[in-house]
Image (cartoon, rainbow, N blue to C red; front, side, top):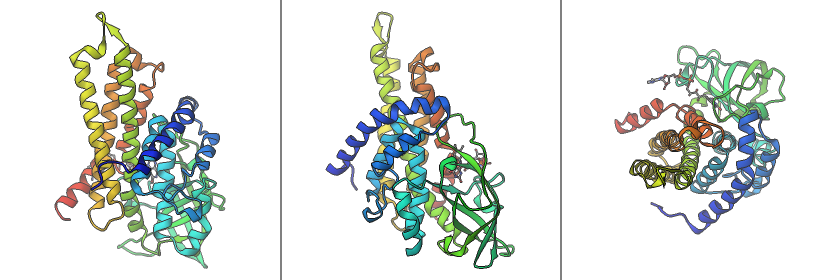
Length: 380
Ligand SMILES: Cc1cc2nc3c(=O)[nH]c(=O)nc-3n(C[C@H](O)[C@H](O)[C@H](O)COP(=O)(O)OP(=O)(O)OC[C@H]3O[C@@H](n4cnc5c(N)ncnc54)[C@H](O)[C@@H]3O)c2cc1C
């Protein structure tokens, strides 16, 4: 098992960190304040292959290994969590299933524009009545000529406002009591696909999360991904990988909280001393640092197992569960260490607090991660 980064992984971390601190951190404040996605920043990230992290070189991707992939998401999220979310979803649950379940023709048609960031992707599983239980989704796919007619409503679509390609999960009409599901690559330009207004989010406010509805939206059979009836398999296998991206994102937020907490504790003086000289503050810093390091090891362990037969589902669930709860705790402690100023916009910690929370919710809540882990332990 690899515990230390390779030379290449260390270089990747340094390079991404430099770019993230200079370009992404300033954009984070503006994106959070205005709630607007920064197209200019995304274009810069596209030029650095951040939209094709694991995609092969011949399609314009960076061809990274899964640990390097996690390192990039971590460093981007450390500076700008909304942009970290954008690339974690695009790479982890849009590009990844295309590479894994797409046929040669689909990869030839869709991969290059996605890997270069020209075409940003979404993963549309959640619906008003189907959240933790995706098998209750109501969007329908009816055979129509040499394609399918899609009808239904998707909610909470990350990257929805800027996407050009959308993975739409739907129940096959006529599949009787034993329902089957399929997933379709649906271009945003298709007739019948409509995007709703951007959600007013608590955190990750710069990501254009919105609903997407489908009204007799026809897609050709060439856009069916992974074969008819294989939608749930695609969804679950994709989420196993995607959760590693959310773990890495959480880790980046947690590390950012530790960085600013250390700095502030070393500068702020009370009772004639810096607050870092107080045992209570030292304990908080020590606990957070320990949790961050443990989350990092578990995230890289899950990344190292990505795609391996068996075991990886439980590890990615453990990594996501642990790192997201670490991020929430690290942000709570960061606000506490900053005292009253932590509760204002003078410091970034109130944003970290808001950004961290959703990591415990999307791509499966913490309760769902515990179910996945328990099922694996119990051999079910
Ligand atoms: C900012 C944001 C971005 C998102 N992006 C996407 C996206 O890109 N694509 C997408 O498809 N979805 C996305 N989601 C949706 C997200 O994945 C769901 O919100 C999440 O899976 C939970 O579903 P729900 O909100 O319907 O909650 P529910 O499933 O209704 O759960 C409500 C509560 O009940 C608990 N619960 C449910 N079932 C059980 C059980 N069996 N045992 C114990 N507890 C249970 C849950 O843990 C939770 O605490 C996003 C959500 C947000 C907020």
